[in-house]
Image (cartoon, rainbow, N blue to C red; front, side, top):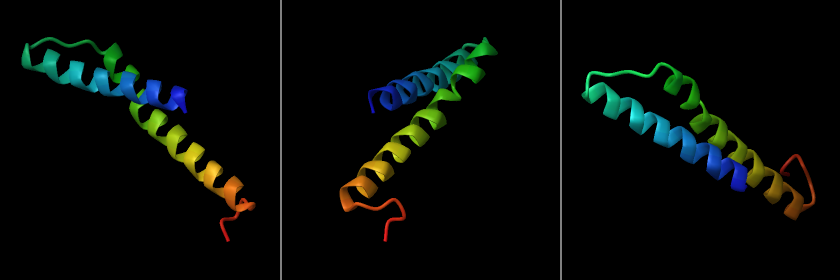
Length: 63
């Protein structure tokens, strides 16, 4: 779960940096690649929560 939060945080900071640099008429194209950590971190966190809930219920299908 810590990895998911770290990925999300890095991605969010990259998105903020993109907007700040845009306001200053500058750009860093590599930040677009780093910003992809935001949805990846969110996906990892959701998958972790779904798996934890399924394991608590004793089933993977969620029934």
